[in-house]
Image (tube, rainbow, N blue to C red; front, side):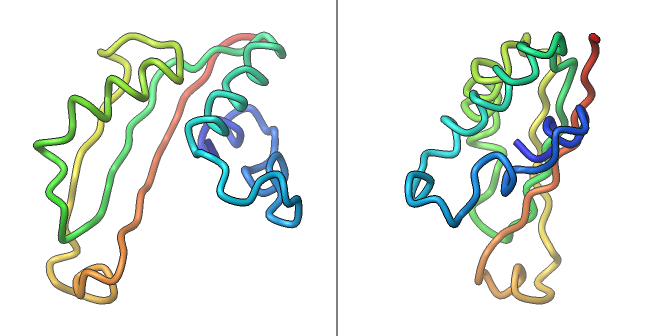
Length: 113
């Protein structure tokens, strides 16, 4: 969500869905992503492609990659060949390496207006 909002200079997820608004507590991230995509469409933009890197010791992303891509393609309204998801480990270092959490990096390109 942040990647596509940022690509359009529409701010970030915290501006669109402030955590100070009780309506956003526990909100499904796919609902937020679809709302951000709709905002792009309303402004004449379209998502062209996204590249997602999940950094985690576990779970391994490979077995889940295609399901993740399918969900993202639907939400982003783009074909399968314009979305890629990959997993990386943190080689056992830091809080990710200790399996205390994970990180995700996403880049997006858009076109239109």
